[in-house]
Length: 293
Image (tube, rainbow, N blue to C red; front, side, top):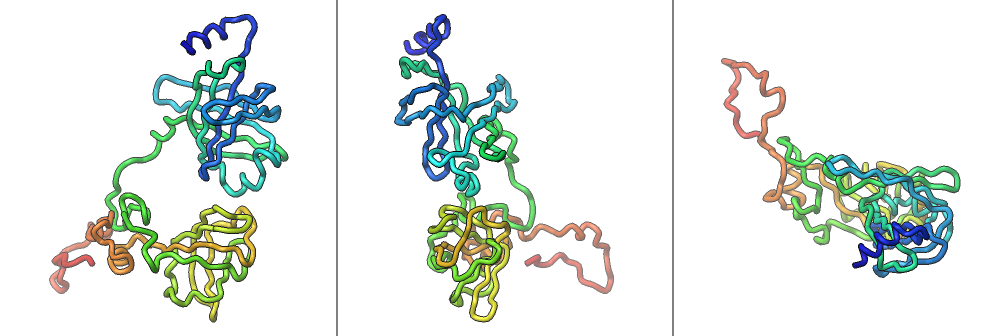
């Protein structure tokens, strides 16, 4: 019935139609916007009028081509803040767009469901690319025959429990250099390099919620120095609390000895190296293949 009513509203000379956008961030926060001049509410979401928020025409297809659009909006203190964009809180946030009869919001049609792609800032404005669900079909799927593990530490394929004692640690930052190098007073309980290729989750301060990837981990005197792959987009300060997670170099030996998880190793440690193809017979050297470990 509501679809018939919406069809009637579309045919009516007196249009009472508007669009509503719901953006669900990775941290669970839901933001609602509408191009109507009054607030709408449905599905437990309040859609606030925003004169500085608009969307380009939605391109939809019936095949496997990607549905896409873009959103242009104003950065403001009460809705979308510059610090939140910098912190990556809107990266791959899910987006739903409805065509709504504002005189009776029960009459609505879902026009788009997808997620936010690239975000660009232009002064006090932001421009976000919207990608349809079919864009996920462009991602490579399958296994690669290689010696290193193809799983991500802690994912469904790896099955390692990050909460295992000794593989995570909560501590305070003693000093920050260039918003990329972190110094810690005493982390001698972990051997050097324990956190290389691991991650840092910030649990307090301006960068709270950000996940950072570790490039190097070493001692400098009594201090532990952890360098990140990228500069943190929000400011880190002395005293901010972080949670460190051990890293994995994808090697079978590391999987077996460090994580005791060889049964879930997703690489092929015995696969011959590339130069094996060019090996020639020899009367003086034993080349039986032997163990590759």
